Amino acid sequence: MHLAQLNVARLRAPIDSPTLAEFVANLEPINKLSDAAPGFVWRLKESEEDPTLTVRHDYGDDLLINFSVWESRETLWNFVYKSRHLEFLRRRREWFRHMAEPYTVMWWIPQGVIPTLAEGMERLARLREHGPTPHAFTFRDFYEPAEVAGEATATPRHISSWVPSPQTT
Amino acid sequence: MSPEDLDALASLHDPVRRSLYELVSAAGEIGRAQAAEAVGISRTLAAFHLDRLVEAGLLESGFKSPARKGPGSGRPAKVYRRAKAERVVSLPPRDYGELAAVLAEVVEALGADERAEEAARRAGERLGRRRRGEPVTDVLRARGYEPYAEGESVRLRNCPFHALAERHPVLVCSMNLALCRGLLEGLGQDPEAAVMDPRPGECCVALSKTNEN
Image 1 (cartoon, chains in turn cyan, red):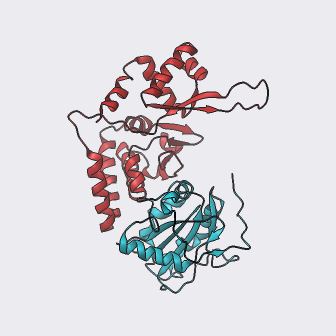
Image 2 (image 1 turned 60 degrees about the vertical axis):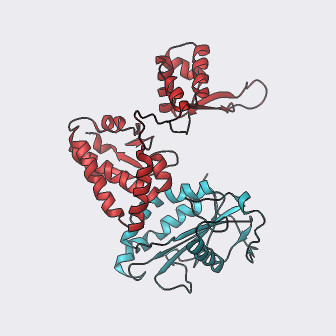
Image 3 (image 1 turned 120 degrees about the horizontal axis):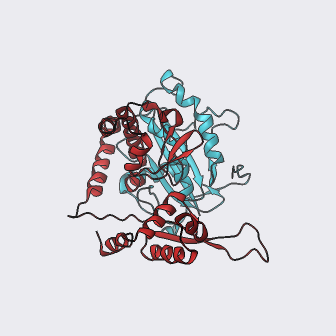
């Protein structure tokens, strides 16, 4: 099983404004770090050519979306909190509004399958409504894949042209 | 505090065992022969004490495959590292961790991270001022950070707030950075020498070497 994670953030100002300039300038190095991190599997990208483009979606212009798949809790944790990425989390208030409700959700998926953004948003809504469950959980209230046994994954899309990214180690 | 905690700590009463425990902690991972040599005792005696520390739950042991494979390369070497489990002994019984976790949750709910960082900075400054003139590594060591030199910087092997940082990583690591910066300021050194530079299994803060003067 692989671990899917979706997190959303509310922008303080439009993505092309001076307030967000430093954040946007760091998208490329941080995404590179993520893609080269041990255990990285897949990440939703707006463009293969322009690394500064953020994911376009129908959930509101001020909502920034980060959607990725990892081999394990540990590999995702090490990228999020144990790499240079942490410095950007620390500074998140400069760019994003405080959210009182959960803004990140995780769930297990079969290997070789990528979930859709709509499914991720549904799981986030489920987490916000019902709290953590084996189908929608967080780092703090984490579920192992065994605990999800029997769950039917919502219409997964199979990746036919999926190529693993090069690993640094 | 459980009877096991007390027994575990009691096993450190033996000075040889204590030096072995400190050696393993500082080395990260070490074999019997190396440990025996560093402490100046026989390999058999080192093995005895190291295994007692494993029984007490203070160390963990594992096997490291020899670098050379195939016939004649020998058995995998037994290595020791510090156990992940935390031991806390407090008399009379105290539990500050639980309350700290509740407060951290409140800070997050209120989005009051910046206020928490400011408070941590002031706390660090107070701690630093009390030890003005002392080398920063000594002060950090006394606070449990276990500093060690790496190239031009000083890294911190241990996170004194580990359990809390596992639950609230961004808040706790940000407060820790602020505390370290305050500490440097209180000591009369450049606070910006403390930077966020996390690595798996270590503290999230590192110090640039300029700070050592």
